[in-house]
Amino acid sequence: MQFSFNLPVNLLFGAGAVNQIGSRVKAYGTRALIVTGRGSTKKSGLLDKTIGLLKEAGVEAWVYDKVEPNPTVPQVSEGVKVLKEFGADMVIGLGGGSIMDAAKCIAFMAKNDGDLMDYVYARRSSGEAFPIILVPTTCGTGSEGNGFGVVTDPATGDKKSLRGNMIVAGLSIIDPELMITMPKEVLASVGFDALCHCMEAYLSAIATPVSDLYALEGISLIHESLLPLYQGKGGAAEWEKLSWASTLGGMAIGLAGVTAPHGLEHPVSGLRNLTHGKGLASLTPPIVDRSAAAAPVKYAGIARRLGGGDEKDCAAVLRKLLADLDLAIGLESQGVKKEDLDWMTENALKVSAAGIANHPVKFSPEEIKEIYRAAL
Image (cartoon, rainbow, N blue to C red):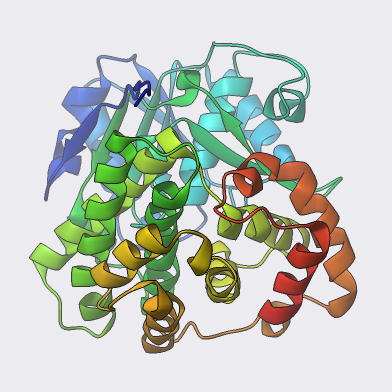
């Protein structure tokens, strides 16, 4: 057995942890650009609370709130412009996965010139970025636990990750109490995304004993918490479990990467701008149908942690969970068209080659197209 381990995350976890943001952040500078969305952190009062806590600690804040789901290169560029005009010396990502990914990319491009996609495709490289502090308000992406920043280039439809330790947060504050205001639909979608992170990291060809520990614990915690919370039966303990599972999933993929479900989903949301977790809900069962026999021990381990018996149960267990979460949906109902299949197949092999290669089954282009067809 040979593997390497390097995951320089700095986590502050627990109910009420966000109340420490002022004292913690002042170690990184005195002028913070807060990257957030258009509505949720304002409606919940979190944005105003954060600005107040920063002010008490002597940190001045400016807000960039133009980030939308599936953040784009132009949104990152606009954020960089705002950062430079304000003179910020750090970036705080306050929100869900799209917010945190955008914050990472803004912090990176504020230190570097040229085209962001050149760095995404490793045509250029840099280890420089402004300090990043992340405060997740959804429990799904795990971006607070890794060095990935997913971004879409609207000129090409390419959705792919900027990657590197330079965009690992200097501090991630995970406060389960911030998740409680999520609408049920969002909870279902992000919770399933977290589950996919854990499953895919466990199945990956480059998984390690460390990533396996994270992934399997994450799957178990999600099984114990996601559905009860969705059904309104969970409490503080379940929010803690799901929040921690999301971070574990982010750390797991930081070590082992993703596989075919994310690999095939990114072209879908890159092209049609649909909700990432819903795209995964459509694609994951047909992928498992075509994969479980190739890795029976691992798929059996996943199935057992989700209430099944062996690898033959895995797809059925997932379909049952998705039905219970009201996520038993096809891609066509989300705006994907039959005529998109050829482009998505080609794009998956372009933007997701590594993830597809790490999957237990090495799907051919025609098999990928057939999976898309089955997911419609």
